[in-house]
Length: 361
Ligand code: TRP
Image (cartoon, rainbow, N blue to C red; front, top):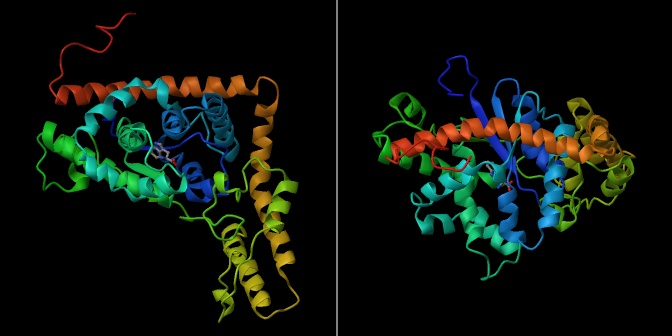
């Protein structure tokens, strides 16, 4: 499937690591963008199960379960396997091979300076005993992306630090092996004969969603998440527990607390948001409880259609259905990734026979 067809849609690649079910932070950070971009782009959505092993090598059963949960989360939130391609990382061998090539193009110190990697080392308490594979995943992420030669990578804010090295690797590869002049503008690489376009990140509507503790970024491990698979009752309860935080307000539009972050993010009628802000600031017989209930309702409105789409996959046989979708997508993904690998190997003068020629059938 060469991408030189002028009518071909530009590609997107993005993905999730299967370390738990997806929550509202994922939705506003990236999923919402993915759903919206599906018609205009040829989308590849990747489940990075290898990456899950970098910190959870002792939990294969949990990772397996989470892979299936993520397929269900994706479908339920409106990512459509008919229009987009769902990909399982470990069944795309070209990604693993490209990871090796790219590891040679990134200085070790550059990898270790990645702020997202540093934060993870701290928040996950990995200390000095993290595996070699842990920092390696950042190189692997370059391969996840570049295997599909995408234009755009829709991600949450925390992932931008991973996209930058990917862009550096792409430039370096193209300069070293495709004879591209280092002064070439990013946008001009494809026209100049590069194997890899220089992709860019696209950040979601909300870079960082605060969790129901009112302080930290929403995260499964911090127990402050509202999941896309939560029941109306769970949503109501979690919203009720939202820590509102200290209020500093000069103007109604100036209410700075977690609750009003939620109001502005999840209540989609701007007039209603303004009214709530005005009444809340004026102390106009409207308390946290009332506002929380209204936000819970808005969140439930968002999640109700997801719940409906999910129902089919919660029945017996639902897991197999999800796995079949993933297999069909991965097959399509391998067509693109194999083509990329062949292009990369040719450029690197590894032209010693076609893929498959030297492998057992
Ligand atoms: N590291 C990403 C996360 O934890 C998941 C991921 C893996 C990814 N490979 C990717 C995201 C490639 C974008 C592109 O959220």
